[in-house]
Image (cartoon, rainbow, N blue to C red):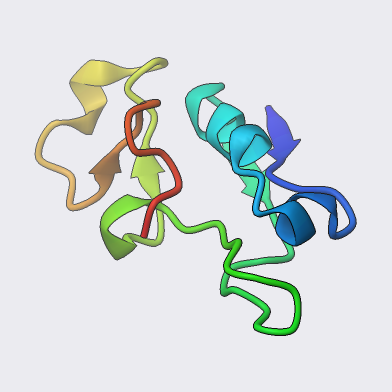
Length: 82
């Protein structure tokens, strides 16, 4: 499943993280964004996997396979926070 954390610049201009947080909690295998880093001309909004990881294991789909991986475990709590 593929989803988007933001569309156009709507979420970034409002610093609205609801769609981003939903994307992380959804179990999507791919989350697209235009804001891997904040655009200082627009605001502080950014989409980053928690703890600075580049990927996270989707515990909703396969919790047993996430053990021992050097990846952030996915989940709604704190989703998207750097």
